[in-house]
Image 1 (cartoon, rainbow over the protein chains, first blue to last red):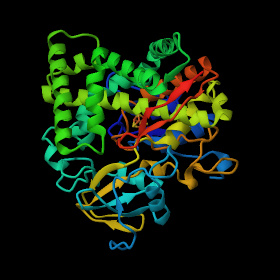
Image 2 (cartoon, chains in turn cyan, blue):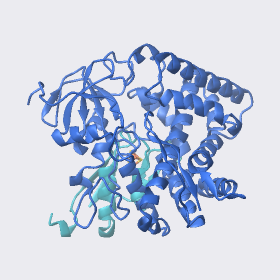
Image 3 (tube, rainbow over the protein chains, first blue to last red):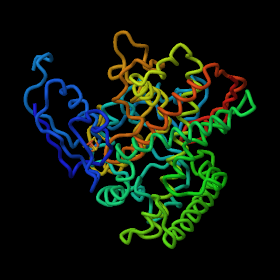
Image 4 (cartoon, rainbow over the protein chains, first blue to last red):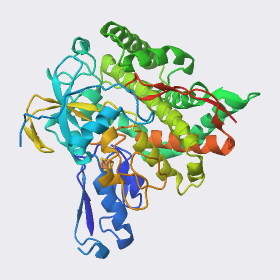
Length: 72
Length: 401
Ligand code: SF4
């Protein structure tokens, strides 16, 4: 599973950092989202999917394999 | 798809009469039961759409076909006659992008998650100080005036650089601004009073800058003095009334469910418990106003360009399909074990509350500390709810310990 962000859509709510701090951070210069990693480890799937769902700017896109247990 | 709805026309804002004192006016739940989008009537007689479903509320708040620009001639207003108070210079909460984003980005650095995390010891000190004063030589207090209001006021004053000694003045002005019962004349006076106060303060900060948000705003050459003052008003009002309401209502509700208080003691469950309190109490009961810029299909109706909508956070946050689930209580009941993280208490979309990391930190620290230090806390008299305010809250909560 991969994750990407669209910084033009980010409104710096920090929801992603609160829900998946290993994957997302906020840039010190412009407060916009930055990725710590683009490949998501299986144990991070749930947090990253939640972060993308909760992102108020709809700036987070998840692609690739869904977690195996959802059957996708 | 029809626009001619046969659903009843509901007054907006509905007053609190009957029903649970911690919930929104029952009329909104009744509207939600008839469909996710129903007709409502504004105080000046205009019709608007009441959007009560979770998915539909998220759409309204994140779809750019709905505008937050209060200067739009059809923007829904919750006080009759208030259109004459709208200036050319509204705060950025009431503007669309790109102007909204331009101003908001001037503040986002102040509320970064890591920056707020670094403030936790300072917030803890403020909470402990307020409790020390509340309990010194006493066994009873009004939790609203002695704890719920001072804590967020002290925090926001510190961050903004507003002298706390002035809190009586701006608290009473902001109460008037937030009251559904204020006349247009009272609103005008309060709005000007608090703007004048912030204009003076930012002018002083321009001369003698300190290490605070208002000084940094005042120093910017891409922000006019009026814009800086309007931003200061927004931060000051939003920064203390909302969190104060959440602390007071949460405490009162927890005192009715003492079996759930242990959920606050464990650092692993405290953040989730606070999300559940935010979900259930959703203190913006009257909804967030928007105006449609295009025709939009929404929840089985067509909202036409130029029609007003009210996005009702409180009903969306009680949606059984989203927050219900086996093993949990009904969504109009407190259940600190619930996964409430999808709630919309801070809104959604580009206007979502900028101060939410700070609000969360304050609530977690205030509630954990209160019940840890005063395990015998209990109600000691008649509770008073602030039913007339656009930010629902409490006027008094007598307690003993
Ligand atoms: S949740 Fe979305 S809008 Fe908020 S900081 Fe992260 S990417 Fe930006």
